[in-house]
Length: 306
View 1 (cartoon, helix red, strand yellow):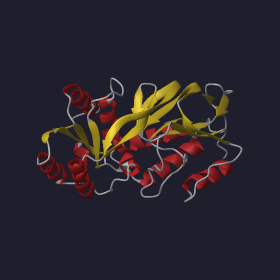
View 2 (cartoon, helix red, strand yellow):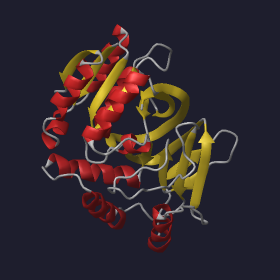
View 3 (cartoon, helix red, strand yellow):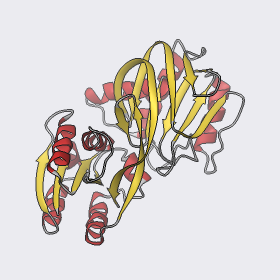
View 4 (cartoon, one colour):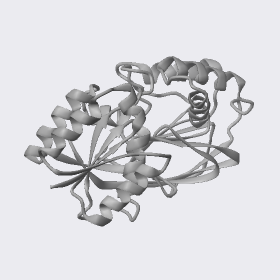
């Protein structure tokens, strides 16, 4: 078995020694190459080359950004047979995708589980989503959610450590300072249905997910890697109604409902258009401003070693 270990250096900085332990363990089970990423997009290039070379497994040691890059490299030419399987060892701050797969939060424990999965060839096939031409593993957002991600990325670029408190602070600032939150600047277009005006669009590929530490955020409690895409949207962002819906999705038994809520389940495709350019995020990565995004579901897109 041939494998590639893609290492985000930030992961090794926060979890010293994990890279060497993981590489040593994997080398005993596979013919292994280890590459440390050097810049944004490097993991995508490495994974794409691994797919071209016909490797069996690509292991991502890092956070959700590293995993997203690896997935986009593996699927650069679309889902098809013979692609390397994906394996994940959490090394970021949120590790949403890893937790959605049920992996341990500890890199050491996740490594042990990964090795056992490789020995027994234990894997599952997951469906993924696309926002235009960018793959995502658990969520994408247009509008308020993406603006919060942008705020967090700017703070992190300035040296602030990512944390649940940082997301909460930036979320509150964006909510109360956003000039367009009381209007509905987005249009949801679903084939075979009337257009709907919405103020926020959050597309989910799995449940639960969270940026808030161990506490799950569940805007789409029926979302699954085994179905199409789910959508949670709000027609308006009034303070009282938004707080009520926030409590709903933070509940242990979430059931988002109300006149302002728009929800979709198991969709193949839909489009969200904007009156003005608005921020787009996928898997917590700011992709810049868009005026229109087509979201598509791809069932059984990739094998994941679990």
